[in-house]
Image (cartoon, rainbow, N blue to C red; front, side, top):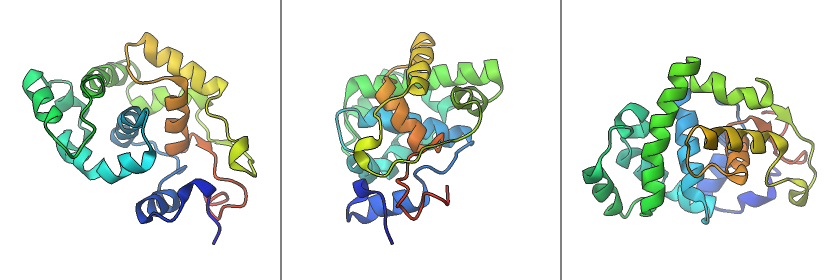
Length: 185
């Protein structure tokens, strides 16, 4: 069974690739989770984030934006002392800010899903890459998403982060055409 080359032999990465990566997501809470985790990954590897994912879920009330939006200094201190997550004050504070902005979008659009999928005209972009070097780190769609999210006050949403988010939540299918998951997603 052939997989995308980035997976390696780590079981968590393999499971993530085989079951989640690139599968179109339309659930608001899961979309929020991936937006936060992609921002947390900035400067790190995705494997580090996946290894800490369950800790993030516990630390951030299962990515409940309503609860996170109400976090104060006490919560920030609690999170800075939590060795199970990335203890970066800017990333923790951005999660709180992003939760507030996420709730604003839900109020304006009804769902975050409706808002975020507009950047790909509400359907998955199916790329046909043969090698990892063909896969871009950003696209015009991720540029537009990043610009719009930044205008709305989101943090840690640069174009590269947005593109990784788009890949993770299936807005684009960047499984290599030789990967067994390419046709399935």
